[in-house]
Length: 315
Image (cartoon, rainbow, N blue to C red; front, side, top):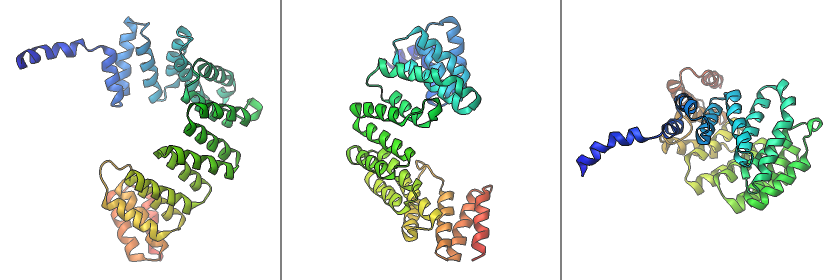
């Protein structure tokens, strides 16, 4: 049996379709390789929607918006009842508008049309309703931006997913400057959802509002609930940058370093840099200098570390 498997294995590799090969390259972020495979394949099979969509996705990852646009436009025209194709087409037009303000005015109507079409085709499409909420909140009123319209789509989100609806309303009221309502909805999302995203959105909101102590507490709660070391880094970062709750920041960063692994998002060198800032804030020059020296040893090219060292030397 083993011999038979060995004999057949090369044929299995040959039998893999180019689209499957391209998807594997895409999943490991070899987007150029994925594009190369798909472009050759589509020359022979120009009607393969899966290949065209994946090609558009790969172009998008490389921010090649014009090329991505061509793929999604083709798909949405050939498949007018497919909500996701309209959503992706509208999304890439939105990215083009963000990068080129001169083109943005001419793209607004098309973005609206594609997003609305996707929403009408799929009453349960969460991503497109999020896109509409953000679009109408970011768009100036003179071009059709509208908080009322954003709230309408947030209400639709709430019908599909209460957590998404609450997060969307938190976003809307934060953008509108209504701190009280924004906090209310972010807290509601955290209470009923309890996901990492819910904790992060509430913590980020507090950070933006300069309620640093509240932000630290949310990150500490998240670290405990999810056993996630990165949240301790975030708590320590807020403490260090804003010279608040320094003992909490000290403990958070030391624990982050003690439990550090390759799975963590933030470099251990940056953790030492933040510890140096905390110790400087506490007036402890020797400890601050020790940690900034470690940070510089790990990242000798980082100019902000050298600036921190100069500040410590002035203590």
